[in-house]
Length: 167
Image 1: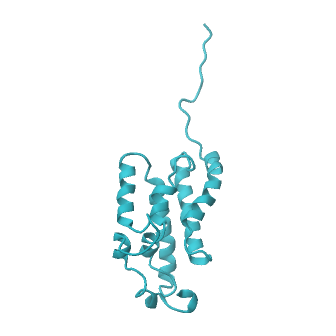
Image 2: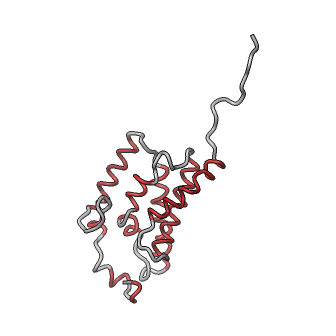
Image 3: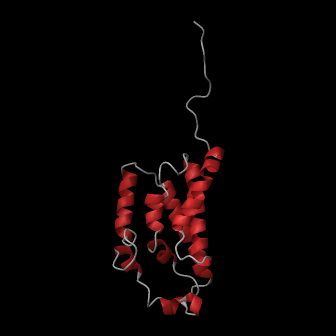
């Protein structure tokens, strides 16, 4: 609609409300529409210590801050940050895809940088790209940077010196 000259005020009547997005009472891809169910499952994973909070929270906060800035500057051109967080694959990607143990950074600082990168790339693709959803592309792009992130943010080794004794 924005490409055809409609404003967010005009489009808000056509798109689902934030409550509909939260509860999943709207059409969409399977597994990404009930934000509440995804959040409950993500919190369960954090409580069970399967994942840490660093990647999901940082990614969603980065997306909220960036889209919030654009929305505050021009609310007739850009959607509310809640719409960006609750729609599409943002929550699904944050809790279930970006936290993959094999492809995510090892350290907490690395996880935060990784998640900030995913959030920024997602917002850039969503707002300025030709593709309406950018979470999966952002995760793939940042996965390519994980070895570099792990190089600069190495985990602390146990102990600091190796002592050897000759018997």
